[in-house]
Length: 228
Image 1 (cartoon, one colour):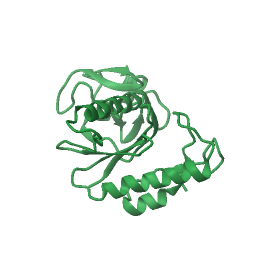
Image 2: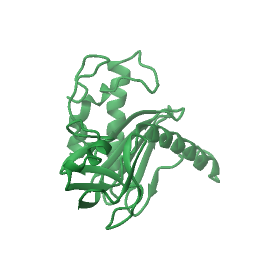
Image 3: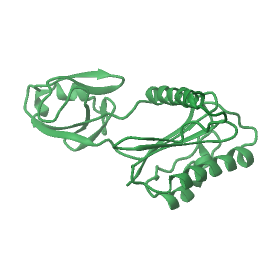
């Protein structure tokens, strides 16, 4: 059981905070000799399989790792360009791990806006007035939980279908968010480029779900430890 993602969406449908706390699952790993019998292409700063579906490797899968070294976008962890590395015969044989790619920042912004619209449609479809909108969506692999405040801010958590205590987690996130906006940054206004160090209450979140453990770093906007 796990928490997959956390989203905070403002009343206009803009994404103002997002956290992923899971790694993409590897679908297939295979050792290749030169020349590579797959066609790879660069799309949205990711190296994807364009042709050559085989052995569990499917069109649309992304290159996740090369020789056990993680790939971040179009570069390996040591800064080598993936397509250039795979185009050099001297680097073979090579082991490549494939899987579903992470969402890009633009895709997350678009999905947050789409959910905002879907939430509004759900409220309008209600046969009774005063509908709370979408509170939960369930699939066979995850559940989406949403908590909307009186001011229209939506807190969304994607979690394992078996995960318990999500309502408490949503309200704890809201509590930390409120503490930040009302007491730490009283002049802060809603928008996509806000200072994110309201999540300085990470210890409280981890007390509920230890899967939420992003790295600690210094906030560039207010010189405070963002995850402290």
